[in-house]
Image 1: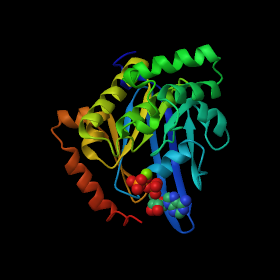
Image 2: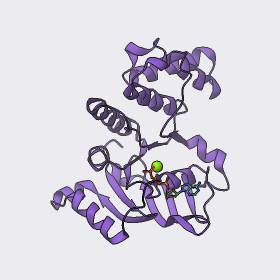
Image 3: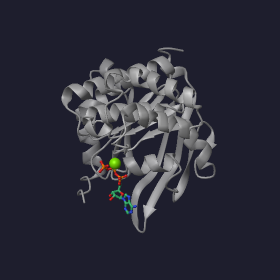
Image 4: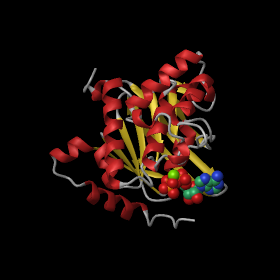
Length: 255
Ligand SMILES: Nc1ncnc2c1ncn2[C@@H]1O[C@H](COP(=O)(O)OP(=O)(O)OP(=O)(O)O)[C@@H](O)[C@H]1O
Ligand SMILES: [Mg+2]
């Protein structure tokens, strides 16, 4: 039900999720449950383990230990079923830059089994939903970073996913574009009970976009926070973030 975010079932359940590369632990025994319709922020500095956690959720990276369940399905044993439920916008989604934005979406829709007419209809509907109605016939090579990310969002919505995972979706967008993008995510989530994972190292953006936040550092989930509860208690996300980083040890040097 709209606005009834706390009541939804858990659509993402991570249990002791761990990834080691040799002796290096990139993700360290993470336990986390995310409700249907929630916007959850993965917040942490470079190398904290956010993207590795996402890749394990998608079934693209195999955990060393622990498990991921997406809508009750194990992502290691059933990666294809899991991938159908998730729209994943990676840090840099490529388009066919000599084609228009609309044609790029039509192409994705055709690959997802839509008829030709159905694909065009779906693509147009999504272009409007992400505010690109004026840019339909423009080649994506001429799109700004903000437009590309909105097109990316439309692209991942084509298969009507239950969950959308956005990895650093706002990097390289100008401030006004970031605000528009965040507003769009919040509206989409509210209107369609869409569960959204928003991964970022930007504290302000996570605070604006999300209902709850997990602070990651050195592969560990240091804190899980409900932003509305924090506001009631007058707690500052920055203070809790700084405490978490102090406890978890200095962030890894970025390679
Ligand atoms: N394939 C790999 N082989 C070895 N080490 C890896 C591999 N992938 C990631 N790592 C390491 O695991 C750690 C976590 O990386 P990850 O990309 O998950 O961090 P992140 O939180 O997404 O950081 P960023 O903000 O830089 O995107 C980093 O130290 C990274 O160098
Ligand atoms: Mg990353």
